[in-house]
Amino acid sequence: MLLLLKCPKKHISSLIESFSSLRSWITLTDIPHRSTVEAMVRELRAISDRQTAETILGNWDCTLGFDATTQEGIHLNSIHITTQGDCYVIAADKLAGGTAEDYHIHFCDSIDNLANAYCYFHGKEYR
Image 1 (cartoon, rainbow, N blue to C red):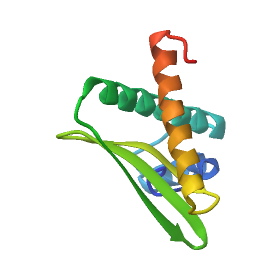
Image 2: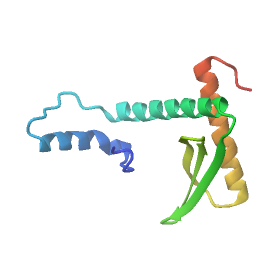
Image 3: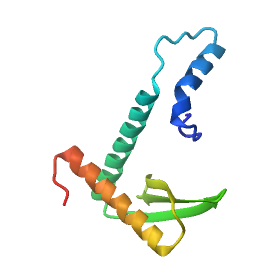
């Protein structure tokens, strides 16, 4: 939940500890360290990339979409794929700007990342 709220990973461990102290009936003995939280985030990203790549390869009728916005001077772009019943996020990243070249690089890098993840999980070589 904290990740969805854009909480910096370095604060998550201390927040978990604070939340548990608010609930008198919950005593946490093991709170994940910052490095553990960061590892979990990387693993979730890898699982998401694998799932997205497999969805693309398993569906003939997919739609690639993107949406961009600028918030507080930061240009954000998200790339997603939709099938008949589902939507998967390929990437949601900060871009240097909003030019066609920036979008092109973001699309290509994101699809390369999906291909690398797929090949890694399935023991194939990516060229």
